Image (cartoon, rainbow, N blue to C red; front, side, top):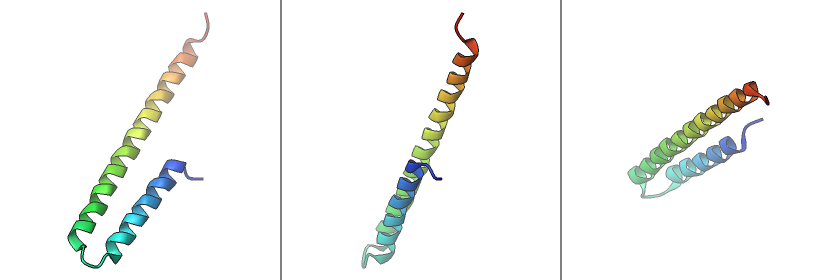
Length: 68
């Protein structure tokens, strides 16, 4: 099962690609938007994974300390 954010980002990219391919006279600018969107989506996904991993590590450290 895919994470909801991954499904959302894929849907957004699919929409952008479809619009870029089917827009009559927007050629280069539409392709540029697709590339920019892909970069932004990739960066957001990378940051989300980084934050998730950091929070998981901190949670593990806190659990190891336990109550005294």
